[in-house]
Length: 134
Image (cartoon, rainbow, N blue to C red; front, side):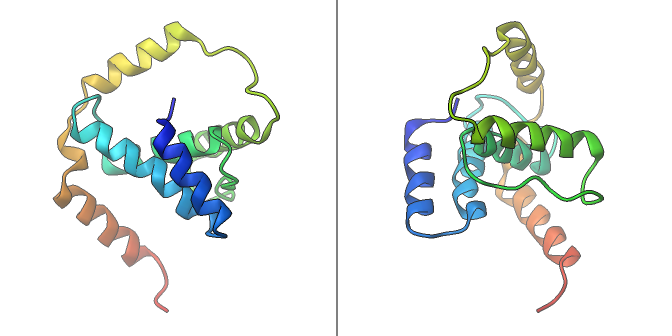
């Protein structure tokens, strides 16, 4: 569950007319902080970013899932499911506590260095290289 401060900052961004990706950035920032403080780890910077985006979609940020062909099919379907859950009126269904615990146990074993400044810098540079130049 995202922290209240993160929810407030994201809500404020949306009210100011900023894009959904900007609001989702607050959730990504929160996730990076969780990895840095040792709450859990991540296999790569991309995974930490993906967890943050997933939290944002579930929290109701109108961030569209990636289009077909942009990511793996399973990841796109998960994003669609998170988006639908976040856009619903009420939080649908109970969370599976056993599954959540198992997921957290696995993440705790992952390295914490994936959220270092150097790792995030490498990720940002490689992502920028893949984008078209202006």
